[in-house]
Image (cartoon, rainbow, N blue to C red; front, side, top):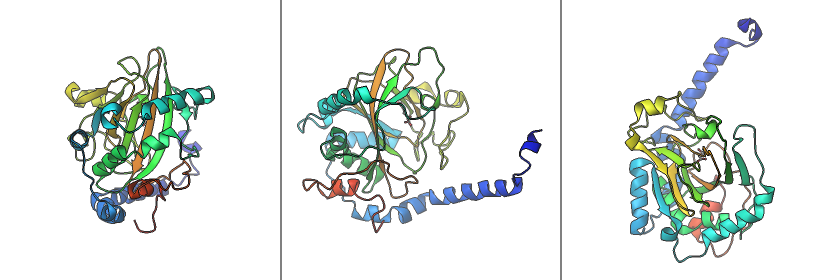
Length: 306
Ligand SMILES: O=C(O)CCC(=O)C(=O)O
């Protein structure tokens, strides 16, 4: 019966296609190709900035664990009311929050990923703030592109079981996936914290647990993480509004499983020249006050040299 239904598919050709695809991505995302070929140009124009002690601590944590925590007040203390502006923006757009698809039903989007940014959008201003950009670039070791942005209102699910990104998974589409998450509301154990397996990123000790696969990412078998990784290596990211999580989401992570209440999470992605998918948002005209690092980050994803 089963075979009858799929009799029109040439199974041998399909298996061949799957192997070819696996081989293609294995080569494309292999370190030498990723580092020396696909990101040669971005590495060549990168000038390491001088970092504060806090930024150095964050980069060290990211390199070692794939994840780091800080608070916006410590990172951007004297440079504008980023958090307040983002929270005001959230209030303004909240009546228009909408769902995106039938998979992440626990998400409403205050800002969808395909937004047309204006220069004064507080999310864009935060995403391009040099202390943030400098760390994304330092972690990646190159000039990165501001690639994705979503502002998510995460809803409680009551007694429902965790689904999609509430379960352990790895993102795909680049070898290192550099993300900045900003909590715009307080997050405790019950309000859906972001949770990460320390050392599950590239070169980390848990990189082999259900390794990253392209182009679709993947979910480990149920309980595989709990069976393999000690609780001491599982980091639950709690914090008041303004807490920033820097994470390489090629590593194992999950979040947004809320029993009660809601969570506001701004999620920003910074990519290398190897990113498989395209930026979905539209960028504004270049602002003359932006410096070269910011102009590169907001410029074309595939600069003429790469
Ligand atoms: O909602 C969260 O905390 C995690 C989100 C996530 O894992 C994702 O968007 O890939």
